[in-house]
Image (tube, rainbow, N blue to C red; front, side):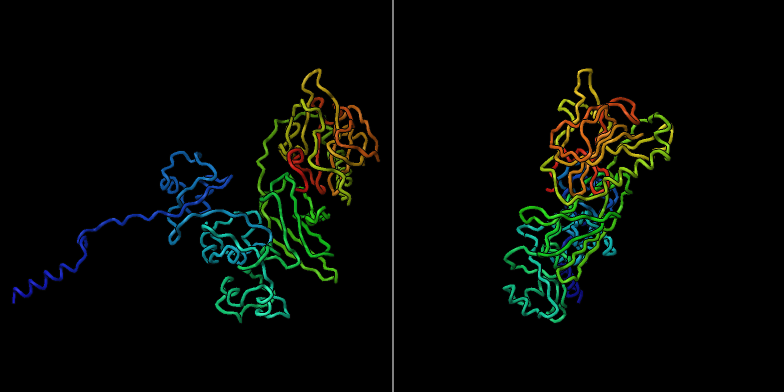
Length: 470
């Protein structure tokens, strides 16, 4: 009997996996890898994924948090159930969790989890959304919108596919619960029509450049629509003015972003009025980021030139001139320098300003070109074709000239010694228009050059380095 018990015990012991009696530490599973984007910091990456900076540095054997570069990969620890490579895609106007999920074929709950999204309203235009990177996969672009009088079967036949393919591609378990107006994607579409995600069908494509928006920048919004459609809209608190581009590129609105605008999200609304008088509109918040403008040293000036009784009427006068949008586009290509090539700059756009011991409540609304030597040219040139709409002497701006370039684009030239054009003159790019001086509120001779885009001062350097519209 004892022998039988021993034999049974030996047999049972052979069934127990080796190592059962030894407590072993399981091999840690490495987390997913995230591709570092331009502008990322280790702190921002840790915050995005809800991990501590210390854990992120430890997981990647990083001793210096500043020693990272865009395009490299870092392992994200502590993300259960997530693997592979994670990339970032900017949210465009019209993107929703549903449309991104369907377009990129990613489970919507996964998107919410990995991006810590608790409400659809958190999906701002210009924000980076984390997506798994898939090999040999191209996001779907061919949209299909089911009309009220159209069945899914009819729409599928027209799209050269079948109802079940449409249903499964877009996350439906059946074909009966797909309602009219639903934005769907067709995986076998022959072309990329209506590619602006969850927008109403009248908006075939909406492009916003650059994203995210920044203080003091020029925003370019281009829309392709059906023929005969009238467009308007609102960005922050400014009404947008759309003008048709050549070669069928669509209609474009250029809008400046105020340099003192608080960095956060703001509403962008686009409205299309169809030939029959009906309208389709869409509104979504768009992110405005800080441009991190520097602070200039305290300036001591004539007290009269900072007296609101003087400055406010003058500012209102310039604002009334630059708020009009002439429908004709007068300029071509990039703007030219308004001074000779051998120039020096005294102060940049957006620099925070304070006067006579006051608080830093103002900003520098243009670019200052100084006089570098006794032999330096004093000439001022038109940077682009336009029409002179103002010349005169002002308290703060001194001898001033304003040129209208069309489409709501204006340039201003302050503190001149001499004005060489008059109101109504048509000027050409490179034409001599004035002489650098020291009139108005100045601490020395210079040209203060401004660019206005739909009533907002923007960084002139953008107009020297970029072509608008793109």
